[in-house]
Amino acid sequence: MIVCSCNVLSDHDVRSAVEAERTRSTSQVYRCLGCSAKCGRCARTIRRLMDEALGGAGAASRNGCTPSSQ
Image (cartoon, rainbow, N blue to C red):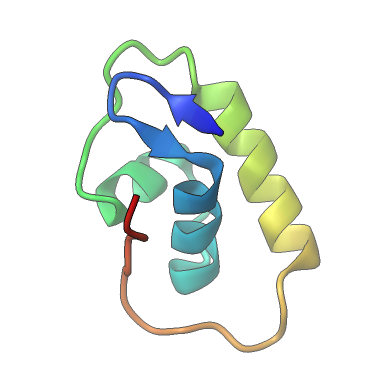
């Protein structure tokens, strides 16, 4: 599902960035994915996805940002 229309980011992209870097803010997610916030309408959804991923993420995390292919 697309969560950011401005940057065409999917929920999978956001989850992958959070799991890879254990990001703590939406700006870190954008930076990890190589973009920046535009209109901000997706911030709440990205925050919810971050909370879900951090709450249920496994103990091991990968190093580096690895945006998924779309």
